[in-house]
Length: 142
Length: 433
Image 1 (tube, rainbow over the protein chains, first blue to last red):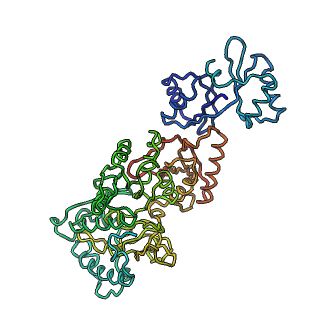
Image 2 (cartoon, rainbow over the protein chains, first blue to last red; image 1 turned 90 degrees about the vertical axis):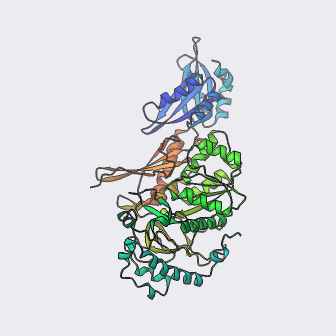
Image 3 (tube, each protein chain N blue to C red; image 1 turned 135 degrees about the horizontal axis):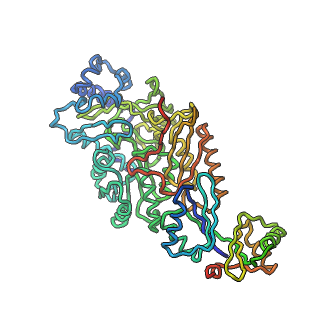
């Protein structure tokens, strides 16, 4: 499965830049990102081309980071694609905690990144419906 | 069970009382050699004293008295007889100075040696003294005591954390002395460097100079896989070596042959009984250069009252952990609280790291307490909901303890100010009116 990096950060000017600085120095490429924050702190979530290296670099820089599994599904970059994926999951009663997506190339492909309560079921039902779950190595070479 | 001075450490209580009375009379007579006590004790007739408890007839000595009589006002010997001066760390207000004769220094080293041996350390141990030297008494105090025991002493002082770790590795340190906040910081650096704190040769830690909770002790013991001992002392009473835990760890044995202990109500000065929490008031029974009589330490604790003598065989009373200081008690929305109460709560949550800070502000007429804590990176799951739940759990636990609803703020590890001596735990931004 694909790996997502989560970084805790205080909600202050310059904090994001500090993180991107560490990743730039480690020559890790960011594929997609998402920020959830409230008044005082937030979590910066990233997909990278080399999550292990990115994770180590963040740890060495003294940052509070974790590495979690997420389900990355390949879809066509057309209207209704996300809806179809969500329908499959709803029918299997899989709850979605978090979701974001990105377009990968000019061939109209997109990747939907899902953080779900039951990753194994999500993966199974989506694959049964003909979806391709992108593993880490493929994702990172995009 | 090892003793440094078995005869005096196990002296039956009646004999201890006889010794205390004799020494009390001597110290009063000696104190009169100082300008300060000559006046202060003019009306006292100690020849009428029949028991150590008669000390209550004497007036208290306060830190204010020491400051007013800076520099030599309490000195009882000619200046040429003094061989050392120390100064309080000035945690609260202006510093005070304390002088020692050669015999005072020897006596002090002997007391510290008692503590070291009581905790199970011995001659063959390698002792790294990870604490400030200089005017602060923690450094030289333990240093001299450990040398008396015959340990190899590494006077590494505080700071330069990577070098501290290297010294531990190279010389196979088995015993350390440090403040709780710094030694916890050292473990964080070990982990960052890829070292497992449990893999070192450490077996015993002396933890002092900052009041800390039982949870903090356990955290230190778990992180390093050692046995940690609490230490009590203050520069006015020499420094470390006033009271210390034995291997039973049910309170700190207070060396009553050298110090006469009272516990009083900090507001009224009335004597309190065993088990009752109040301010420690101490008379030095043996110090030559600068005896202090009925010193108001400002430290809050109680005499352990479990109805039986300590299983270690020592007759000297035990005091509880220091619960706080009369001068660090905070009044928030009319409620009295001590930072240590909040520390106790925080240390029971594995998700938070070891450093914290309390911020007090006044919003309109209302006091607002913000508890700033650092997250412990290893426990971070990357889940915002988990953080919100944790925030709420901590908030509720603190509210249950202190009856005031705080704000809880999470910070990145290492982002809260950390001092290498005594940690600044409270920032009070409320305007005095």
